[in-house]
Image (tube, rainbow, N blue to C red; front, top):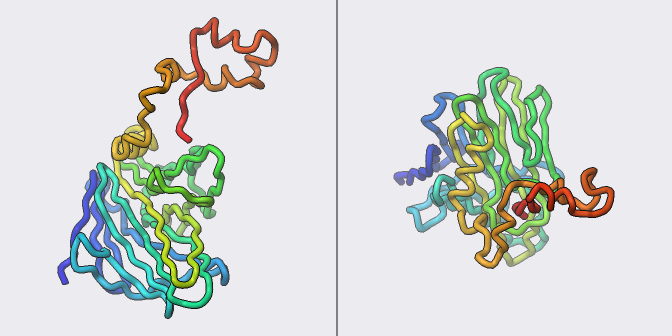
Length: 272
């Protein structure tokens, strides 16, 4: 069966039947992006759950790929271009008799030049080391993680309207200098039910680092980041979030809010 090629922005992914389920490439930095894959972890056993050989879907309306990791558990992946992002919809069906505790999500396999890559974990910029790193911070964390070089920025994360109670951003280091950049979420699939989680992957220029990924993410889902018409327009004035914070060093003494008044600034409207 001929595979359907999915392209969004500067990222191209092609599903394939068998063990090498997804090929991925970007024209921004040849050799940086080596592939893409879906990861699955069994929460009861506390062990990775191999997906096994993939079956190829018949067309864009069907699942791009489907797996049966174990008897009674079915997993399929649908891909769709949304702006500059490729949307991954991962659906799990439990036909067994026991609840499934799953952690799943996409991973991009990268080979960055030594000493040239930086990682954004959803909160901070970090240098890569020989050790794996991850972030499970929920409060204020960006649902997008990115790795960039001077030539390209690759990112993976949650679709911005996805409501979940836990997610993890990670980089896993290989002995050959390779890096697996991933975002995973947890879900419980009860017997006789199915659950789905949506993720995104994207490729952008590397000139402005993680900001290139942010720009592509915002532009792909503008309805999620556009202020409601009834929001006071003064909320989008110059950033003064920390100057307006009631317990901050600038407002620790009365009259509270005086620095904001004198500097003619207002609290920053931030993503939640």
